[in-house]
Length: 259
Image (cartoon, rainbow, N blue to C red; front, side, top):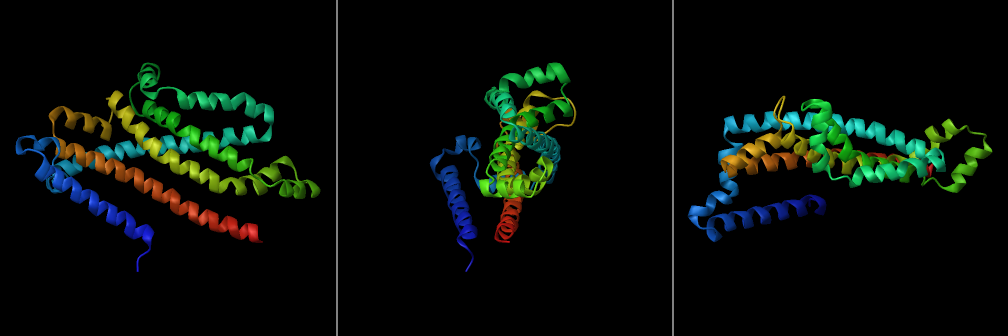
């Protein structure tokens, strides 16, 4: 029998698709059905239409490339900031408030400024992704680095470990599960940041955000919903990847603890 973690999402998916089909075909008047086409129409006119599918997948590829570039930079910068803050209390007091401020800035207000300052192409989109994806990496990594048991710190002190040895052999391995949890959150946020940037930065290769805006203006609801569903699927795949990685790391972490 398949595990519940597999069957439960499938059951929910079938129920949602059934409710969507029923609402589209039986609750909405025929002349207004273009506002909410059924899943069958989205599949036939969106996913199965080769021209529409190619257009959406090309735009989605551009968006994912921007999101992954921003995510990688956010991971490197975020882990670096967290490491610095974990090594000295004054560094945490000095830097952490700015990480919080970065998270609370209204992204829609500053995105146009990035265009003025850095241009309207690939680089500015990546900066937006870094901005929205950085905070979860910083907070989760810092939490993991500070969660080392005092007894383990005492053991390293007893053996005369240097600060670098303590970081590489104790703190970072202990922090890995928390770090990956931050990566999972930041992955979805990077996708969202890339789509938001697409709405503002219209130079260069079009992203999925620009295609969503085009379909919205045309009232092409089938294509619009297809773009939204595929964007969500991209974020879900990224989440699953980090979830898979988290399971492997937690198992290895548990074995290390056991030894």
